[in-house]
Length: 215
Image (cartoon, rainbow, N blue to C red; front, side, top):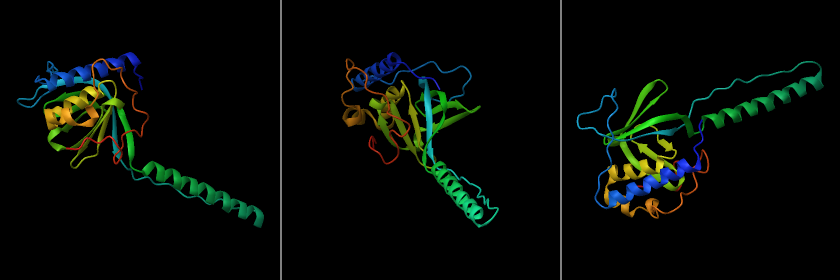
């Protein structure tokens, strides 16, 4: 997994600040030429294409096998049962940790933002997340992260240098200019400001935590 340099992160922050400034002064979200081979909906336009780290929030069904190792006389037999119990307890704990709801990494993928959806080619197939299915936007531009919570499918977190730009554009597309101007998540995005610290770790901005941008 590639690590982005501070210069790349700083440029991503600068571009996001410029985008917010332009949107608040009446400009529209910029347009890109559509990819040559990707089929778009009638009236669909492309706003951005950038590499992003994808994570999805969900739990898993995890199974584990128990073992019993006991042999020899009473002392060895008891020791074997104790060792088996310890091993089984550890296996149960590991299984519970793996099954718990958490952010699960789904690759670093080229990610396209249009006026209708987010698209990404991952795992040998195209994935799409429609804007009409978004219930909440949890924007954290200062952490280079943006989370989308949908109706009927698992939440998606995007991180990387382009995340602040995506957060600004999505806020404008989904909620409008007033939301982008008033939400505290976007305050202080001055173009001359040094870029902030990147997201602190894999658990940053999880469901139920601070950083939500509610409609």
